[in-house]
Amino acid sequence: MNTADQPTKPAPAPAPAPARDDGWRSASPTASLPEVFQTIPVGKGLGFWRKLLAFSGPGYLVAVGYMDPGNWATDLAGGSQFGYTLLSVILISNLMAILLQSLCARLGIVTGRDLAQACRDHYSKPVTIILWLLCEAAICACDLAEVVGSAIALNLLFGIPLVWGVCITALDVLVVMYLANKGFRWIEALVITLILTIGACFLAEIIFSKPSVIAVLGGFVPKFEIITNPKMLYVAIGILGATVMPHNLYLHSSIVQTRKYELTPAGRREAIQFATIDSTVALMFALFINAAILIVSAATFHGTTHDVAEIQDAHKLLSPVLGVSVASTLFALALLASGQNSTLTGTLAGQIVMEGFLNIRLRPWLRRLITRLIAIIPAVIVTAYYGESKTTDLLVFSQVILSLQLPFAVVPLILFTSDRKKMGEFTSPTWVKALAWTTAAIIIVLNVKLLADTVGLTKLIFGGQ
Image 1 (tube, one colour):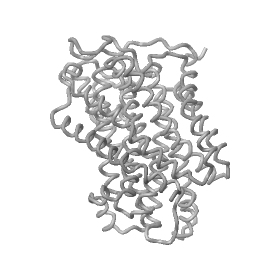
Image 2 (cartoon, helix red, strand yellow):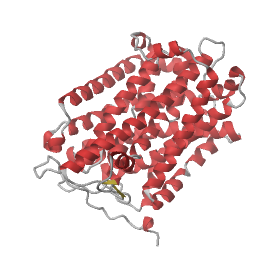
Image 3 (cartoon, rainbow, N blue to C red):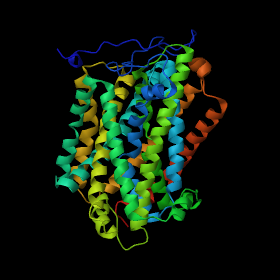
Image 4 (cartoon, helix red, strand yellow):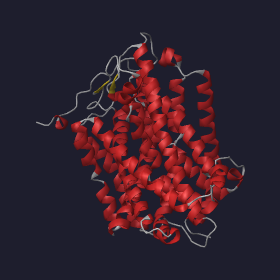
């Protein structure tokens, strides 16, 4: 009988390394993603590069969320409307992501808890329920971007109607179930293959579009205009929401525990080091792809008479404007790889969030199906209602929703990793705490500014006067 169909028995996760009152409600946390918990061995006596290879993988699953179709919508909008100006926002957002994901790895490795479990073991039940509902809303917004992006790609490549395309993307849950049975490394291999596909497609697009190197470098320098221009700020916060994603914080703190590292202070310290290198390198790939999308959009459409209101417009115009017949096909292929990659990791994140906050233990196939339906049903309804005319606006709007949810994941993460009672000798250094709180403050201030501008911008974004 397939073991994946058996009810999962909660396996005890490793307790925090130091023997002390660690400040958690539960002294012995259950394993996160129990069917793959500590299933990937890290051999003793390996050299640096072989050990890095053993730890490599979780960072790429996390990086997928930083290059999903929601990023495409915001990057295309930013490039076509404002040229290279918002490249600085992509860079800053990516640096924030590297910092926050390193904190996630630290939390998971040291405490044996993912972020959702940590919230459940720290906050009261009412607060935990509120945080869970907010996180589910963020996952729905994220999934809206991912499945709509995949549906658009299927429509562009094969002419499949958007609603049917959204339904087809739900089948990714079967892929996750199949690969999880074969081993977590298979999921990581598929994700990395799709990332390389996206990167190759956009490397070709950059070569085709021939951007100005000087203008590109200038775009990475932050400009005050981004804050003072409401329309630019709206897209900028959309980029922030598309880059630093709430569900990725929960995901990363869980999947770093798939490695079977030594449960000693030295073993944990080494695991933190290699997990941080893994996520940093992977997120640099995400930086390249996000920057490439904006650069191609700016080089091709900014300052021209071409109206790029939708992803479909970019697909239709790329080949004729660049004079390269394969450009549009590569664009759609990369979009499909991006959407499917993101839905794979989104399915895992939904499972982690539901199990972590609510401590619900179901058969693996059932809980994946439930978490997938929670996200896919709103996407089907919204797509059917709006149709093809406003899909990119919906993608940008979904990323702004994600950005509004960020403080409710970021603040607990920083609090937990800054708490010496919970983390012991692995508490974040002072300089990391300072950077982390600065990052949280920037996110919160920008969100307040966004809310102040939302009433007037909503009519503008959705075609009103």
